[in-house]
Image 1 (cartoon, rainbow, N blue to C red):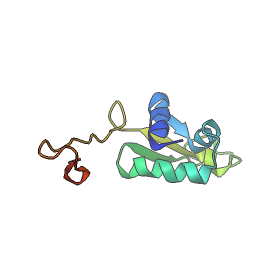
Image 2 (image 1 turned 45 degrees about the vertical axis):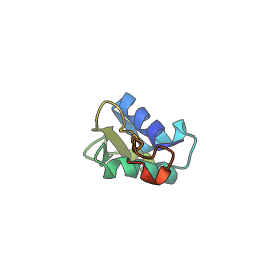
Image 3 (image 1 turned 60 degrees about the vertical axis):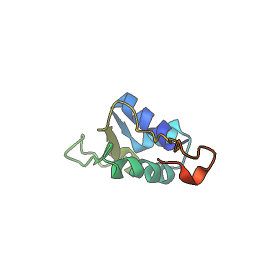
Length: 97
């Protein structure tokens, strides 16, 4: 599981619960939540906490079902492209990001 996989999964489903993410990636909800937080910080994903007013209000759901994520970002997660400096292509210290 990498950040891009999580972003793609959320993007495809538009909105997804933390519980569903943890099941899909066969990982601990705390680990998944920490990884999704990176996308939240980049403002590509919005964290939504469902409360009694957002659902049926039975209060029987476990905590990870109440936490949802919505894709806000671009059509695909951003990637970083590394471009070599043409003056010294063999010297990695001269590469630009």
